[in-house]
Length: 301
Image 1 (cartoon, rainbow, N blue to C red):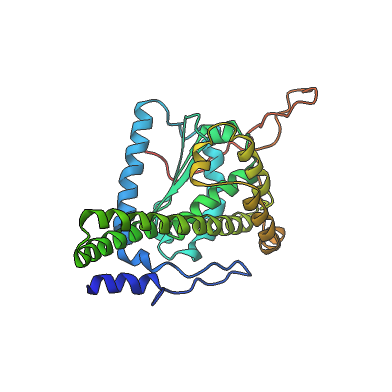
Image 2: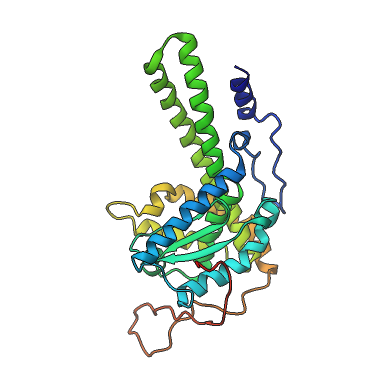
């Protein structure tokens, strides 16, 4: 019973610290549910899963090498963003950040707890993402890790199972009661998931803007994602619902982050300059992927 009371207290936010505002970029309280699951365990599990993913991709010849232009591009962008992420999470300074690119047609990208970043070639190639749009995707995913949304969901699951088992026993509901209460837990998770997405959008825009990438690219990114969702939605959109409401929210938040971008040092090298190979008769120019100097950040080895 004491454990359930503790879970309820955390759910109400008792003892949960308030996130600091950063020049108008303010998010809500950190969820108390994260305290139900040790961060070390979550990060260790993420490292193991990420390592297995990388190894499987290597075995299938689907892991792009460290000297591939797209890998070098993503690591260069990450190298600019990561230093601005540290104030959002005191553990982030201890993370062993890694960036890999996996050969796949999926429109997908993620950042696991502990700074384990992966992009699929599908989202880069099919959407022809500019550097600014890549920074929006990367900032968004890093924000999920910094705000520990995965740990929060795991904590909610633990609290739901704990509460359902105890309440069902007290009320004599048995397994039927467990099922009903678990359904309620899923609805609770859905609500927090929507909030998590909005929070990750805002924090991700802030990170990218401070790193010198134009946050207005968030609008063009989601328009591209919406256009690509004909038929079955891409994998990334299945967990990152888009739409006019989301784009409107991003546009409303631009006033908070544009001042950061305007005064931020801009990247010395752009990887999205059009390839200079002649006339294209009005067709979009392919990305050139310039800037092939050494960028060392989280080799997959």
